[in-house]
Image (cartoon, rainbow, N blue to C red; front, top):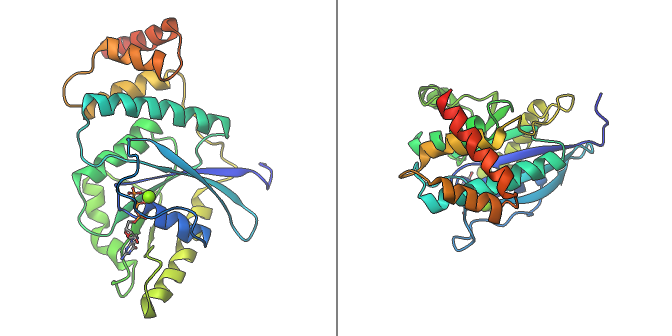
Length: 260
Ligand SMILES: Nc1nc2c(ncn2[C@@H]2O[C@H](COP(=O)(O)OP(=O)(O)OP(=O)(O)O)[C@@H](O)[C@H]2O)c(=O)[nH]1
Ligand SMILES: [Mg+2]
């Protein structure tokens, strides 16, 4: 069995303004992540890390990521996303792998961008190997926050967004009256979902054989135009620190996958 002191790694993702930083603060019980700074550096799959310890001593390392803002990426954004993905998977590998994905969405309409973020993180980055829990925010106006899921769960399924569990919550800290009670209640709901799905006995996922080539190829689906081989070699050598030989191997793997 895994030692009790083991840190679980959580990747949280979702569109800007979905409430990721607020969810981290709610989970932590203190303000550790800054809320919405529109001027901050935003590049798909760029990440910031936070450490959270629950009262029972369980430690979590939460990776707060930048998601897609729209379903399409320009070539430059695509190349930066590849660089960030490579950095993130290597960092996660050093820490023992991903144990849980938290997909943060605002309780409203289900959109195509939500679906793209789900595909990017769950299908492409984690190859469907990591449990995913949905965190639905902005639900303080619901009489019972869980009702949102009753009404909307089937829309998510229509977009092929599937989750192992969900937390219907409010993550807004500055509310008063009964909304304040819902905020406190939300902490319990969120922590419960994290504890249930962040299985300590299951090894963290670190990306399998040929992960990078496979990720690069899948991500092309979101790109406007067709990225050039020499641009991919360029970022793998200049920004990911690979030798030319290894970068060529990756590009050849992508081509092999295309043929098979
Ligand atoms: N009413 C309400 N507001 C919320 C809730 N969650 C977050 N907010 C507000 O929504 C805004 C965005 O929240 P953030 O937590 O910064 O969202 P984010 O996903 O981290 O955004 P980025 O860092 O830009 O990607 C802030 O003004 C929050 O106070 C919620 O459950 N209810
Ligand atoms: Mg944030």
